[in-house]
Amino acid sequence: MTELNKKLNEDTVGGTDPNIADTDEIVNIKRLFLQGSLPSLARSALPDLPISGPTGGFVNARKKDGTNDLELVRNNVEVFPSKSIKTGITREAIQDLRATYGEETDKYIAMLLRGLANTQENERFIQFLTDNAYSRDDVQLDAPDRSEDVFFEISQAVERLVLEMNSKSFRTYESFAIMPYHFAASISATVNYNTGGEDYDKLQVSKLGKTKYYISTDANDTSTVFVGLSDKEDVSKSCAIFNHYVTDLVNAVDPATGNSSIHIFNRYAMTMNPLHTEDKPMLLTFKVFQ
Image 1 (cartoon, rainbow, N blue to C red):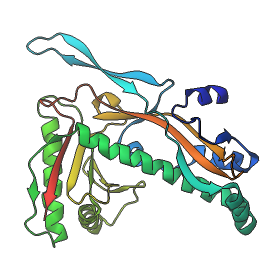
Image 2 (image 1 turned 180 degrees about the horizontal axis):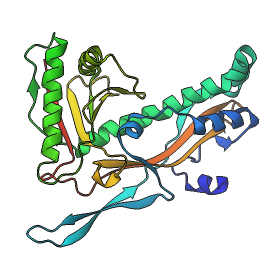
Image 3 (image 1 turned 135 degrees about the horizontal axis):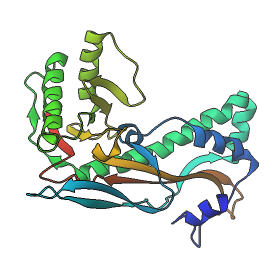
């Protein structure tokens, strides 16, 4: 399987690239990295399913207009080509950290590496949402300095879109809303004040009804909200799916200097539900202005 994974990696080695090989320094780190639980925004918001090959299909069924006949519709699943993430963590750094901090070092290095892989996934996920979401009317906040009012206006807009996405064909009320941190803070503060607070996973900050609220990982965007259907028990009702494929850590050695550093190769896919159309959307977006 290791040899097969190496053959499936794309865009990883060129004529001027360093030699790549595993060494004893990263064997335990790789194991902890692959077992690590630090999901990206995409893996948190969408159903996360494994895929056994670089291509596949998201197939669903719908009723033909004006008839009771069913037809199958499909969106192709295509795994992103592997792009090396150079971490800057060298063999010497690992040795020094182990000498200083002991056996816990590998766990923390693995968490750091998982975070770097997640950063890439988050960037692609936000772009994926931007490319596929249909736009709805902007929201102009009446009292942007009052958390309760911000909570009411944004959550009302979110729930209105969830209902819209179920109005022509009922799918599911299970959904997510992704928004800038300052709006998510108002949602979280108001909900937690009234309910006493609750523990959520990773980037999720709150839950209202069947809608989970997440912080956007795009710190430069101060206005965009994404709302999508996401039923992890029945992926056919979700706006999209995340497919994890191959993830690996390798040591890249610079032949000119002999220095080595860890590189991450991470392959996955994100695919829209073929039932998502402009007439019957499953993913929407709007902007909020203060």
